[in-house]
Length: 332
Image (cartoon, rainbow, N blue to C red):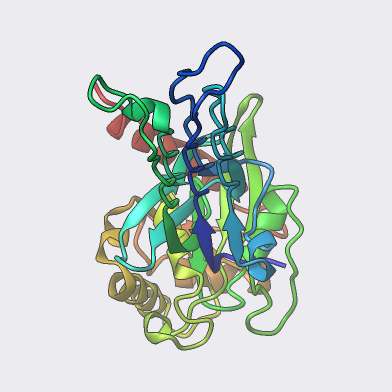
């Protein structure tokens, strides 16, 4: 099950209390204070795990608490610090503080980790308070409470190429044809209900990650159809591929509709490099296909994922666009 949004509560461990103790030992009638400090509370740590692709593990368990620190004891013995707790999250997870709405973490690199709830500091024992004017203090500190908050975990898939189009435009067929992914393919709308990822290989040792985003319809940015549930996954793609069925009555209008929905959701999406692909070329006679395609802009690509018509051109353009993106975004 693909889950890309959950809300949970996290609790840093409480610090242990300091100890009040006066040393008592034969022949040492004035042994003095020897209360140890309390241990530090454990932290809640978020870790980006590349083996995960969903937040399903966090759908049912809503509370995560690190261990408390142990109290100090006599003989200047400090309490044991509490154990940290790790939350293994998919790469691409955003962590938001529900109270402030601020993003407190972005796990966009495999293996990245960060503390999202610090444990409380341990309290000082009475030995800490000994002074020349207070030789036998009978006071100690309580441990500090750990940081507690409610957070939202929001997964945004990381992909090089995002396929965007109306339902049944042929996005899943493209993904299945050019990668080892096997998304569900059928002749009815909204076949794809979750984003699918696949590795598209250009040649030996060079490939990209392609994402099939569930179909958009007019008004998707206002919640119609599958709404904005999956539009957020497009935000992390480097290159957008607009997929339009050649059987559409007005191909240009459909392309404009897709742009409008993306712009209404996030205007910065239209600043990404994009490619337009006209699919299902195999469903028409060659003469009809040519008459339609000749009226379209020259940078459109005619593709049949079934017969592989236009496949080489498609892969070459993807590779060229991604290479250009890499050059434009590499610090000089």
